[in-house]
Image (cartoon, rainbow, N blue to C red; front, side, top):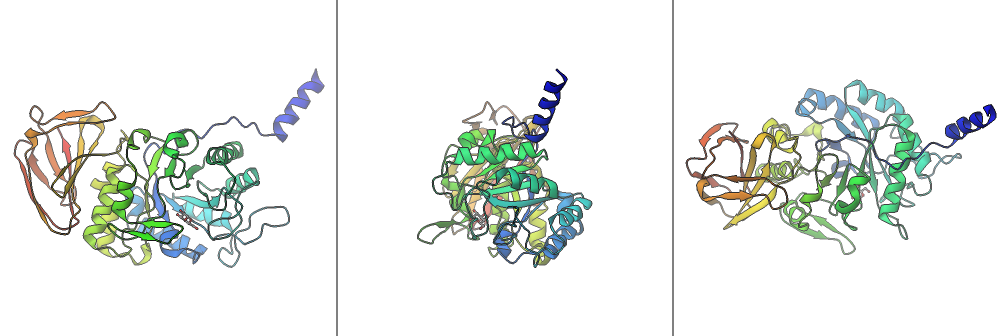
Amino acid sequence: MKRNLAFIIVLILVFPVVTGQKFNNLTPTPPMGWNSWNTFQSKINEQLVRDIADIFERDGYKNAGYNYIIIDDCWSLHERDKDGNLVADPAKFPEGMKALADYVHSKGLKLGIYSDAGTQTCAGYPGSKGYEMQDARLFASWGIDYLKYDWCNSQGLNTIDSYTKIRDALYAAGRPIVLCICEWGNTQPWLWGKEIGQLWRISGDITPCFDCIVDHGSYKDWGIMKIVDLRNDIRKYAGPNGWNDYDMMEVGNGMTVTEDRTHFSIWCMLSTSLIMGNDLRSASPATNEILTNKNAVAINQDPLGVQAFKYKDIDSTEVWVKPLKNDEWAICFLNRKNKSVTLNFNWSDNFIKDPDFSYSVDFKNEKFKILNIWTGKKTGTTRKPLKAVIPVHDVVMLRLSK
Ligand code: GLA
């Protein structure tokens, strides 16, 4: 009897129990942070990550709610070591990932890293295929908090199988790590992602352009509005702990300040992750103001976790609506066209019904106070029609409360 018990204990110690779960409640609201890829690609190193952590504190990003600092592709050597472990490139990360994670944690922040389900990452570094458990243990031992898991060089693999494998490995490794599924929306991850990860990309890579597609032949990069337009009907799959991911932001990366504000506004409305992708060390005051606007962030982080829907088009103005907690609403009038528009919105003509969830509002019978998100001003109530001129590519974004 005793020998049997000892045998069972040894078994449990040697073979971690894989229960086929993801960690509970890691992202009740969309994750917020910064990622190295959009600006730095392979030009990353530990000083940059430390600087970003310092700037998170110094320039108000941490205070606004950003906490993940994510190192994307190109952090490792091209070969695993003799034991099959991934190795952080010592030229870029001389102190190693554990020391870096300790530093980031000492600031009350979290560290993210990147790998790939296939044989190699998109930039040609080792992928995790066949090493899922070993890599998950390594990431856990370093103190990693977030894993972006890409889909390059994955010929012959099945997305659900591969992402389940890494989910189970992370769970068995025992450290709560957010899993970002990055297969670009190829196999409808909104249908299965919630069982596996905390967020899933819905598109190919973003590019800092308001409304264009950059076609590279075998793949495309997507401007802001093109990503917004790409998928219909996926909002019903998003919610606490399982978010549609519209990609890392391009705020501060070359569009006009107005376009950046609109980009940020719509990312907030869509309850997507707010992962900054610009060089925070040289961000302009205007960029910083957009990214740290607490009223806008509060709409993204609203605990109800309901993604906005497009309610209607009024000429060239799109009206996006997001139900919020406590019967509040966010509403965003977005001018997509290349000329300014004059808005005259008579609230009481509008009965808004959420097409996927049971939220509705009849402005004829209900009165709301209005907060203008970007001016920060309280601007009357829904008793009077809303009149505004919306410049090219700009928004009027409001929060309505009783
Ligand atoms: C893919 C991802 C990007 C980035 C690069 C890195 O293209 O979609 O977000 O991680 O790989 O190589």
